[in-house]
Picture 1 (spheres, rainbow, N blue to C red):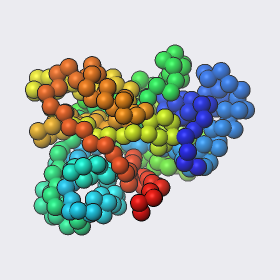
Picture 2: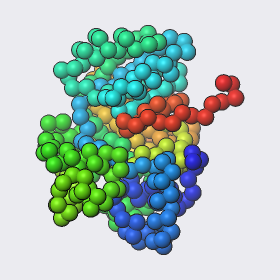
Picture 3: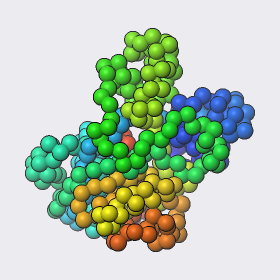
Length: 325
Protein backbone atom coordinates (compact mmCIF):
# COMPACT_ATOMS: atom_id res chain seq x y z
CA UNK A 1 0.00 0.00 0.00
CA UNK A 2 1.26 3.47 -0.86
CA UNK A 3 -1.75 5.76 -0.37
CA UNK A 4 -2.43 8.19 2.48
CA UNK A 5 -3.02 6.64 5.89
CA UNK A 6 -6.26 6.99 7.82
CA UNK A 7 -6.59 9.16 10.93
CA UNK A 8 -5.94 6.37 13.46
CA UNK A 9 -3.01 4.99 11.48
CA UNK A 10 -1.42 8.45 11.33
CA UNK A 11 -1.77 8.76 15.11
CA UNK A 12 -0.19 5.33 15.60
CA UNK A 13 2.73 6.42 13.41
CA UNK A 14 2.98 9.60 15.52
CA UNK A 15 3.15 7.48 18.68
CA UNK A 16 5.87 5.28 17.19
CA UNK A 17 7.84 8.42 16.28
CA UNK A 18 7.89 9.30 19.98
CA UNK A 19 8.73 5.79 21.18
CA UNK A 20 9.15 3.14 18.54
CA UNK A 21 9.40 0.34 21.12
CA UNK A 22 6.29 1.29 23.09
CA UNK A 23 3.85 -1.60 23.60
CA UNK A 24 0.53 -1.44 21.78
CA UNK A 25 -1.17 -1.44 25.17
CA UNK A 26 0.62 1.74 26.18
CA UNK A 27 0.03 3.44 22.84
CA UNK A 28 -3.67 2.57 23.01
CA UNK A 29 -3.97 4.05 26.50
CA UNK A 30 -2.37 7.33 25.40
CA UNK A 31 -4.44 7.56 22.22
CA UNK A 32 -7.66 6.67 24.02
CA UNK A 33 -8.38 3.74 21.69
CA UNK A 34 -9.12 0.04 22.35
CA UNK A 35 -5.93 -1.97 22.67
CA UNK A 36 -7.10 -4.60 20.19
CA UNK A 37 -7.85 -1.97 17.56
CA UNK A 38 -4.46 -0.30 17.97
CA UNK A 39 -2.62 -3.62 17.93
CA UNK A 40 -4.45 -4.72 14.79
CA UNK A 41 -3.82 -1.44 12.95
CA UNK A 42 -0.22 -1.27 14.14
CA UNK A 43 0.56 -4.83 13.06
CA UNK A 44 -0.97 -4.15 9.64
CA UNK A 45 1.08 -0.99 9.20
CA UNK A 46 4.33 -2.77 10.00
CA UNK A 47 3.38 -5.91 8.13
CA UNK A 48 2.73 -4.16 4.82
CA UNK A 49 6.28 -2.76 4.79
CA UNK A 50 5.27 0.86 4.21
CA UNK A 51 6.05 1.74 7.83
CA UNK A 52 9.20 0.44 9.49
CA UNK A 53 10.68 0.96 12.94
CA UNK A 54 14.45 0.64 12.85
CA UNK A 55 17.38 1.15 15.18
CA UNK A 56 20.22 3.42 14.11
CA UNK A 57 23.48 4.38 15.82
CA UNK A 58 24.38 7.90 16.83
CA UNK A 59 25.10 10.03 13.75
CA UNK A 60 28.68 9.99 12.53
CA UNK A 61 30.76 12.45 10.58
CA UNK A 62 29.69 12.77 6.98
CA UNK A 63 29.57 14.93 3.89
CA UNK A 64 26.62 16.41 2.00
CA UNK A 65 27.27 16.04 -1.72
CA UNK A 66 25.58 18.42 -4.17
CA UNK A 67 25.44 17.24 -7.77
CA UNK A 68 25.18 19.13 -11.05
CA UNK A 69 24.48 16.72 -13.89
CA UNK A 70 24.24 16.58 -17.65
CA UNK A 71 20.80 16.90 -19.27
CA UNK A 72 18.65 13.92 -18.34
CA UNK A 73 21.43 12.36 -16.23
CA UNK A 74 20.21 13.40 -12.78
CA UNK A 75 18.57 10.09 -11.89
CA UNK A 76 21.57 8.10 -13.13
CA UNK A 77 23.98 10.12 -10.99
CA UNK A 78 21.86 10.13 -7.84
CA UNK A 79 21.19 6.40 -8.19
CA UNK A 80 24.94 5.78 -8.36
CA UNK A 81 25.33 7.52 -5.00
CA UNK A 82 22.28 5.78 -3.53
CA UNK A 83 23.86 2.40 -4.33
CA UNK A 84 26.82 3.16 -2.10
CA UNK A 85 26.66 1.35 1.23
CA UNK A 86 27.76 4.50 3.08
CA UNK A 87 25.04 6.77 1.65
CA UNK A 88 22.41 7.76 4.23
CA UNK A 89 19.95 9.50 1.92
CA UNK A 90 19.82 10.63 -1.70
CA UNK A 91 17.30 12.90 -3.43
CA UNK A 92 16.60 14.16 -6.92
CA UNK A 93 15.98 17.91 -6.87
CA UNK A 94 14.04 20.18 -9.20
CA UNK A 95 15.97 22.82 -11.13
CA UNK A 96 19.71 23.12 -11.73
CA UNK A 97 20.59 21.65 -8.31
CA UNK A 98 20.24 18.16 -9.81
CA UNK A 99 20.67 16.02 -6.72
CA UNK A 100 21.90 15.86 -3.15
CA UNK A 101 23.03 13.04 -0.87
CA UNK A 102 24.63 12.55 2.52
CA UNK A 103 27.51 10.09 2.73
CA UNK A 104 29.24 8.78 5.84
CA UNK A 105 32.70 10.18 5.42
CA UNK A 106 35.18 10.97 8.19
CA UNK A 107 37.55 13.84 7.37
CA UNK A 108 40.42 11.50 6.57
CA UNK A 109 38.39 10.00 3.69
CA UNK A 110 37.23 13.29 2.22
CA UNK A 111 40.15 13.63 -0.21
CA UNK A 112 39.45 10.17 -1.65
CA UNK A 113 35.73 10.91 -1.96
CA UNK A 114 36.24 14.23 -3.73
CA UNK A 115 39.31 13.38 -5.78
CA UNK A 116 38.74 9.75 -6.77
CA UNK A 117 35.15 8.60 -6.21
CA UNK A 118 32.85 11.48 -7.17
CA UNK A 119 34.54 12.11 -10.57
CA UNK A 120 33.60 8.54 -11.57
CA UNK A 121 29.87 9.07 -10.98
CA UNK A 122 28.11 8.66 -14.35
CA UNK A 123 26.36 11.70 -15.76
CA UNK A 124 28.08 14.09 -13.37
CA UNK A 125 29.18 17.54 -14.52
CA UNK A 126 30.26 18.94 -11.17
CA UNK A 127 30.01 18.07 -7.47
CA UNK A 128 30.77 19.73 -4.15
CA UNK A 129 31.11 17.99 -0.80
CA UNK A 130 30.37 19.95 2.37
CA UNK A 131 31.54 18.37 5.62
CA UNK A 132 28.85 17.93 8.29
CA UNK A 133 30.00 19.81 11.39
CA UNK A 134 26.97 19.15 13.61
CA UNK A 135 23.65 17.37 13.29
CA UNK A 136 20.94 19.79 14.38
CA UNK A 137 18.10 17.29 13.93
CA UNK A 138 18.10 13.70 12.74
CA UNK A 139 15.20 11.67 11.35
CA UNK A 140 14.52 9.94 14.68
CA UNK A 141 13.65 13.33 16.21
CA UNK A 142 11.02 14.26 13.62
CA UNK A 143 7.71 15.10 15.35
CA UNK A 144 5.49 16.71 12.67
CA UNK A 145 2.47 17.28 14.91
CA UNK A 146 0.56 14.00 14.51
CA UNK A 147 -0.06 13.91 18.27
CA UNK A 148 -0.96 16.56 20.83
CA UNK A 149 1.82 17.77 23.12
CA UNK A 150 0.35 16.00 26.15
CA UNK A 151 0.18 12.72 24.21
CA UNK A 152 3.84 13.03 23.24
CA UNK A 153 4.75 13.77 26.86
CA UNK A 154 2.86 10.69 28.04
CA UNK A 155 4.83 8.48 25.65
CA UNK A 156 8.25 10.07 26.22
CA UNK A 157 10.59 8.10 28.46
CA UNK A 158 13.89 9.29 27.01
CA UNK A 159 15.10 12.85 26.74
CA UNK A 160 15.85 13.85 23.14
CA UNK A 161 19.55 13.86 22.24
CA UNK A 162 21.16 17.28 22.41
CA UNK A 163 21.16 19.24 19.17
CA UNK A 164 24.52 20.40 17.85
CA UNK A 165 26.33 17.83 20.01
CA UNK A 166 30.00 17.36 19.05
CA UNK A 167 30.75 14.00 17.44
CA UNK A 168 33.42 13.30 20.05
CA UNK A 169 30.82 13.20 22.85
CA UNK A 170 29.37 9.89 21.64
CA UNK A 171 30.69 6.92 23.65
CA UNK A 172 32.10 3.86 21.93
CA UNK A 173 29.96 0.72 21.69
CA UNK A 174 30.99 -2.48 23.44
CA UNK A 175 30.80 -5.77 21.49
CA UNK A 176 27.53 -6.66 23.26
CA UNK A 177 26.07 -3.26 22.47
CA UNK A 178 27.06 -3.62 18.81
CA UNK A 179 25.26 -6.97 18.70
CA UNK A 180 22.14 -5.36 20.12
CA UNK A 181 22.29 -2.52 17.61
CA UNK A 182 22.71 -4.98 14.74
CA UNK A 183 19.74 -7.00 15.97
CA UNK A 184 17.56 -3.85 16.08
CA UNK A 185 18.80 -2.42 12.77
CA UNK A 186 15.94 -3.68 10.60
CA UNK A 187 13.27 -4.19 13.28
CA UNK A 188 13.54 -2.12 16.43
CA UNK A 189 10.36 -3.64 17.88
CA UNK A 190 11.90 -7.06 18.43
CA UNK A 191 11.02 -8.31 21.90
CA UNK A 192 13.45 -8.71 24.79
CA UNK A 193 13.29 -12.51 24.66
CA UNK A 194 14.12 -12.61 20.95
CA UNK A 195 16.93 -10.09 21.42
CA UNK A 196 18.38 -12.20 24.23
CA UNK A 197 18.32 -15.26 21.97
CA UNK A 198 20.10 -13.61 19.02
CA UNK A 199 22.67 -11.69 21.08
CA UNK A 200 23.46 -14.25 23.79
CA UNK A 201 22.63 -11.75 26.54
CA UNK A 202 20.41 -12.72 29.45
CA UNK A 203 16.70 -11.91 29.24
CA UNK A 204 17.00 -9.51 32.19
CA UNK A 205 20.05 -7.72 30.76
CA UNK A 206 18.50 -6.84 27.40
CA UNK A 207 15.99 -4.15 28.51
CA UNK A 208 18.61 -2.51 30.76
CA UNK A 209 21.16 -2.34 27.96
CA UNK A 210 18.65 -1.08 25.39
CA UNK A 211 17.43 1.58 27.81
CA UNK A 212 20.98 2.72 28.59
CA UNK A 213 21.90 2.93 24.92
CA UNK A 214 18.83 5.03 24.19
CA UNK A 215 19.43 7.36 27.14
CA UNK A 216 23.05 7.86 26.05
CA UNK A 217 21.93 8.66 22.49
CA UNK A 218 23.95 5.75 21.07
CA UNK A 219 20.80 3.97 19.89
CA UNK A 220 18.17 5.98 18.03
CA UNK A 221 14.77 4.52 17.17
CA UNK A 222 13.27 5.98 14.02
CA UNK A 223 10.15 5.40 11.96
CA UNK A 224 10.75 5.01 8.23
CA UNK A 225 7.62 6.21 6.40
CA UNK A 226 6.95 8.21 3.26
CA UNK A 227 5.97 11.66 4.59
CA UNK A 228 3.25 11.86 1.93
CA UNK A 229 1.40 9.00 3.61
CA UNK A 230 1.02 10.94 6.85
CA UNK A 231 -0.02 14.26 5.30
CA UNK A 232 3.26 15.85 4.18
CA UNK A 233 3.55 15.23 0.43
CA UNK A 234 5.91 18.10 -0.41
CA UNK A 235 9.58 17.80 0.52
CA UNK A 236 12.31 20.35 -0.09
CA UNK A 237 15.97 20.91 0.71
CA UNK A 238 16.70 24.33 2.19
CA UNK A 239 20.16 25.89 2.42
CA UNK A 240 20.62 28.99 4.55
CA UNK A 241 23.34 31.51 5.35
CA UNK A 242 23.86 33.64 8.43
CA UNK A 243 26.73 35.64 9.87
CA UNK A 244 28.96 33.31 11.90
CA UNK A 245 27.80 34.51 15.31
CA UNK A 246 24.16 33.84 14.35
CA UNK A 247 24.53 30.33 12.90
CA UNK A 248 23.88 28.62 16.25
CA UNK A 249 20.73 30.70 16.81
CA UNK A 250 19.38 29.84 13.35
CA UNK A 251 20.17 26.16 13.95
CA UNK A 252 18.24 26.27 17.23
CA UNK A 253 15.30 27.83 15.39
CA UNK A 254 15.37 25.06 12.78
CA UNK A 255 15.34 22.46 15.55
CA UNK A 256 12.09 23.93 16.90
CA UNK A 257 10.27 23.75 13.55
CA UNK A 258 8.04 20.63 13.44
CA UNK A 259 8.21 20.36 9.64
CA UNK A 260 12.02 20.01 9.64
CA UNK A 261 12.76 16.33 9.05
CA UNK A 262 16.55 16.63 9.31
CA UNK A 263 19.01 19.50 9.59
CA UNK A 264 22.75 19.96 9.95
CA UNK A 265 25.50 22.56 10.08
CA UNK A 266 28.01 22.18 7.26
CA UNK A 267 31.04 23.82 5.70
CA UNK A 268 30.64 25.99 2.62
CA UNK A 269 28.89 29.26 1.81
CA UNK A 270 25.53 27.97 3.08
CA UNK A 271 26.39 26.69 6.58
CA UNK A 272 22.90 25.36 7.36
CA UNK A 273 21.07 22.65 5.46
CA UNK A 274 17.62 21.26 6.23
CA UNK A 275 15.18 18.87 4.63
CA UNK A 276 11.56 19.78 5.28
CA UNK A 277 8.31 17.88 4.70
CA UNK A 278 5.21 20.07 4.54
CA UNK A 279 1.49 19.73 3.70
CA UNK A 280 1.74 21.78 0.51
CA UNK A 281 3.05 24.80 -1.36
CA UNK A 282 1.44 27.33 1.00
CA UNK A 283 3.16 25.73 3.97
CA UNK A 284 6.52 25.73 2.16
CA UNK A 285 6.01 29.42 1.35
CA UNK A 286 5.35 30.26 5.00
CA UNK A 287 8.27 28.16 6.27
CA UNK A 288 10.74 29.82 3.90
CA UNK A 289 9.46 33.42 4.07
CA UNK A 290 7.79 34.12 7.41
CA UNK A 291 8.84 31.54 10.01
CA UNK A 292 10.64 32.54 13.24
CA UNK A 293 13.82 30.63 12.35
CA UNK A 294 14.43 33.06 9.46
CA UNK A 295 15.00 36.11 11.68
CA UNK A 296 18.80 35.99 11.35
CA UNK A 297 19.07 34.32 7.95
CA UNK A 298 20.90 36.40 5.33
CA UNK A 299 20.40 34.19 2.24
CA UNK A 300 18.24 31.19 1.40
CA UNK A 301 18.07 28.57 -1.37
CA UNK A 302 15.15 26.15 -1.68
CA UNK A 303 14.93 23.15 -4.02
CA UNK A 304 11.91 20.84 -4.17
CA UNK A 305 12.58 17.11 -3.84
CA UNK A 306 11.17 15.37 -6.93
CA UNK A 307 12.41 11.87 -6.13
CA UNK A 308 13.90 9.98 -3.19
CA UNK A 309 16.17 7.06 -4.05
CA UNK A 310 17.43 6.34 -0.54
CA UNK A 311 16.34 7.43 2.91
CA UNK A 312 17.70 6.47 6.30
CA UNK A 313 20.13 4.08 4.62
CA UNK A 314 17.24 2.19 2.97
CA UNK A 315 16.31 2.21 -0.70
CA UNK A 316 12.98 3.92 -1.41
CA UNK A 317 10.40 2.42 -3.75
CA UNK A 318 10.21 4.12 -7.16
CA UNK A 319 7.57 6.80 -7.62
CA UNK A 320 4.65 6.02 -9.92
CA UNK A 321 5.46 6.81 -13.55
CA UNK A 322 3.70 9.84 -15.00
CA UNK A 323 1.63 9.99 -18.18
CA UNK A 324 4.63 11.61 -19.90
CA UNK A 325 6.78 8.47 -19.50
